[in-house]
Length: 235
Ligand SMILES: Cc1cc2nc3c(=O)[nH]c(=O)nc-3n(C[C@H](O)[C@H](O)[C@H](O)COP(=O)(O)OP(=O)(O)OC[C@H]3O[C@@H](n4cnc5c(N)ncnc54)[C@H](O)[C@@H]3O)c2cc1C
Image (cartoon, rainbow, N blue to C red; front, side):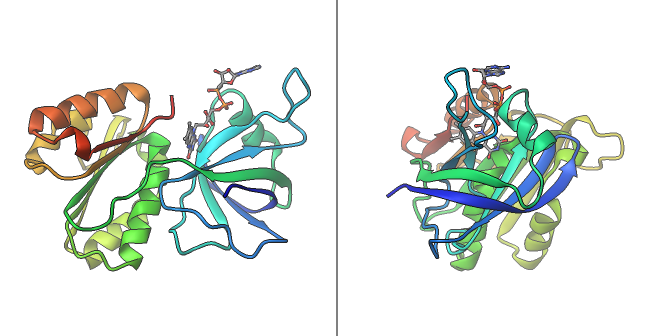
């Protein structure tokens, strides 16, 4: 069942000029129950539409499924509500939170799994990977993550450390534009996915709409079946 909560911004972590991680806490309910991959609707009493109703936007939950006493959201700065979040919201401020919603859910850990994220599309993937890690998933997990700028690569240290600790976790980041000192891959994920993924298995995609479509086409070309292609649509 969806909850409606008044949540306090406990912490705002600045990742880059256009990327922040918000941590929200609340009083009144103990746990916020959700499944990895789901999202919440966020609004503020101080940001209203023309009809004087709070503007609402969807944000994917980043924390693992068992972490229910707070919410972590990874938000990029666009033009409207997210701009308000970046420019007006401070630690200690209160936001309205509604959820959880969504059907972009993991189908367990019976087979090797592939996650493909672009930009802030990394948010639900972090939740999936943290949840699988906590549950001790023993299958191969691949994460392909592309950003335009190296500085926008969120959760990099966490993924690099996890890849060192678990040889079955494969982290393949790619920086596609402003990447002066970047030593890793620079192509779009569709240009090299086939080097790593050659067989049918569950694949989860979240990124800008054009990327979603291109990745879907590429996966079909590789031979991934429709039932194994899961896309979270943000557009
Ligand atoms: C399921 C889901 C999960 C998502 N998860 C995340 C996430 O984890 N992280 C993340 O960063 N984003 C996420 N998004 C995207 C997010 O919901 C917002 O779309 C994003 O933050 C941009 O919102 P915005 O209002 O700032 O943006 P904009 O893209 O600038 O505007 C969006 C719309 O707002 C309206 N608008 C814009 N400017 C004005 C104006 N001046 N006056 C009136 N209306 C205006 C227009 O209708 C415009 O199309 C998710 C989206 C979905 C659907």
